[in-house]
Image (tube, rainbow, N blue to C red):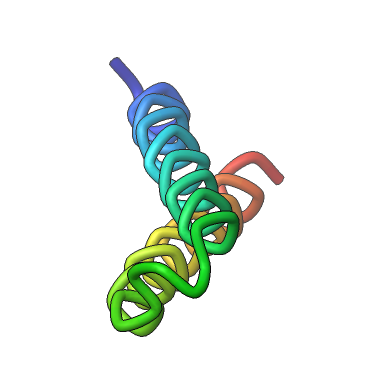
Length: 65
């Protein structure tokens, strides 16, 4: 497997993780005010997942050009 294929596979995993984190954050917002204490924890996971996803997209763009 070459570098681009490895990055694409990583990107697919990161995208799934970011999507799940987004859904978890959405689900939490729908439950409010129940579990309001979890807002920072769930938001942190979503933020970190999207930071990793954007970094992987940038790396792929750099390698692809």
